[in-house]
View (tube, rainbow, N blue to C red):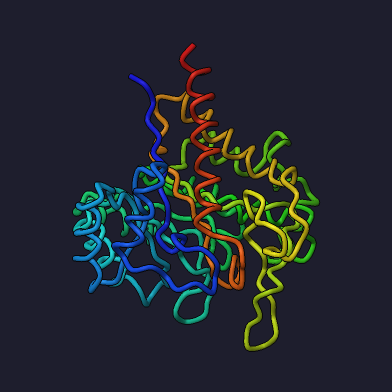
Length: 332
């Protein structure tokens, strides 16, 4: 039986420039359906939007396959249960979990804390037929990348399956980026050779997670080594965005604050290729879908003039083509 892989889009990316208003729910589903590129949408809507999402999903024959949210230990356990119930109501298979690095008391959470929360999420998800996945993400416990494998080992020692959402933009943008490598002191791990970010180097961290079969879900938002900061976005203290989004296709003259260079995307693309090759060649691969996530948030595309929706389409077209080639090679 041929290996399946579905491609979707996070609904916050179903718009064009940052300044454009977000289309209503039905319009977003209509836009997605018209492309003929996407198998599903990715969203955990507010409780008062669930009915409209269900109606649009049925009308346009687009399932809401996954969603996600962010959580803090000691504060959001009930919120997780409510969101898992929403996922169940929508027919979603995956709930993506971003877990903050500090708990409600301001203390850095331990690996065992993460494992225990994940066990709680698994048990609650199992009641509702929804698979929780821990996301690799900045501002979360997993930004200290070596901890992901440490937690994975704890979880597996508990007799549980370890499932992550791989968003490797958060790894790629730190390559050759001294400022970002100071966060959680990963520069020291890199100097010692314990942490390898470059996907073209054996033993790199994304390859480790992929080879262990941990990737259940994936977010596709392209980034490049030492990704340009998002200087068109400024917070109340004058800080600019960290820069964790790079246009996948030519954004057009004057629509991006740096000269666009397609070749810079190769490290990001290489992780996608490696993930797809693993999925195509391993019967026990748990990867089921990849969601594009080009968004207009502060550290990503806030202030952008290029079309987020066009970027998602270009990225998905490339991923579909790449998957077809990899799958054909695996089936020879």
